[in-house]
Image (cartoon, rainbow, N blue to C red):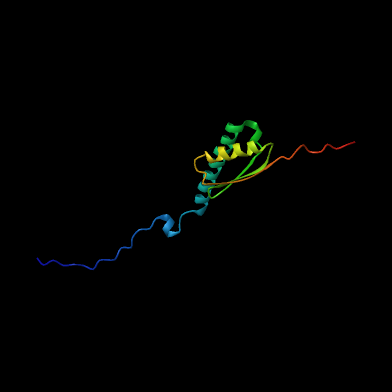
Length: 111
């Protein structure tokens, strides 16, 4: 019996959800936000561990692996402690330490 070959329909390669554009970008954003929140928590924990409550008021902002510290500390030593604490945290790629060192006591209001 002779062998007959029928035409074969070409098959396109399957695409992943991201490649096909059907992946939910909101899900990706939520995952990224969760990672940022976890990194922020680890940074804040490191600050508390190394300097106690004296660095509790430091503001921690994170964007694409860059950690930015802002706020005011009582001494240059505390600013250095904050730098050391943040750089010891896994996931920190860069640090921008914008902490201001207090220059003295605030003037008291006279009545």
